[in-house]
Length: 251
Ligand SMILES: NC(=O)c1ccc[n+]([C@@H]2O[C@H](COP(=O)([O-])OP(=O)(O)OC[C@H]3O[C@@H](n4cnc5c(N)ncnc54)[C@H](O)[C@@H]3O)[C@@H](O)[C@H]2O)c1
Image 1 (cartoon, protein in one colour):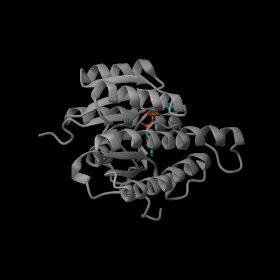
Image 2 (image 1 turned 120 degrees about the vertical axis):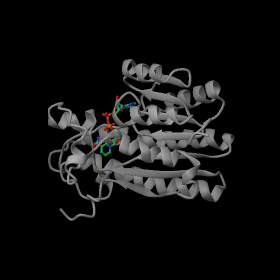
Image 3 (image 1 turned 180 degrees about the horizontal axis):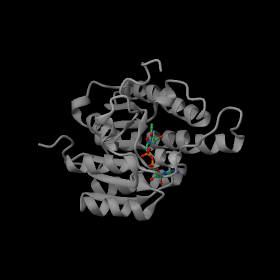
Image 4 (image 1 turned 45 degrees about the vertical axis):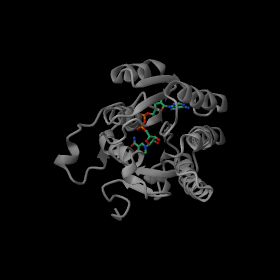
């Protein structure tokens, strides 16, 4: 028996980085996976790598119609919905002084509105499946202070607080739907590589340097797999840091 045998999962932002790794790992553990992304070409390639247990759907997480279509198609194709990984996001540099209202709204629209819509439409389908697990990809930016990521931090903070609200709502309604947030520090993906001129960091750097702040996408995907599986059935409304103690280190 594999760890998420037979579960039907939606992973947003599955064309790249952590979402790609989530989709591959969930599928390797028996899940059927709907991969969604704006980037259709790369998303279809990941789905093809998985094979018949995967389906790619074009998806802009900021659009309500897209969410309705993605959830409806998932249920029609695979019969149910058990897991949503709200993962797609954008990163924008800017302190409070140099973030325009336009940039603020752009980041909040993708990184918060997109997650709100995901929770809303996933819950409706999961209720019909007898329960489920929603995993919201947040960040340590929601918990600590990151002066250069003002809008990004605010959006991740909103997702973190919404996660607690969703978790308790579903519990009180007796839906058997859990909702948790995951809070990585740096991950070696195109998102962080863009900050250093598109350069990939060596994957082995964490092993060589215990102070290194960049983890591999698999380090985050392992937590997503655990939260998607029934092994985490008593974990609800939690904030799981994946930061090698960075937030509490005081440096
Ligand atoms: N990389 C890090 O250091 C880091 C740290 C903490 C948290 N995170 C979070 O982890 C998650 C994954 O990040 P990543 O590093 O893999 O990023 P990434 O840039 O490699 O991948 C993000 C994916 O989201 C997609 N996307 C962006 N906007 C979209 C939209 N409106 N609709 C649908 N898809 C959209 C992109 O096309 C891309 O494929 C994000 O939520 C990010 O905020 C990343």
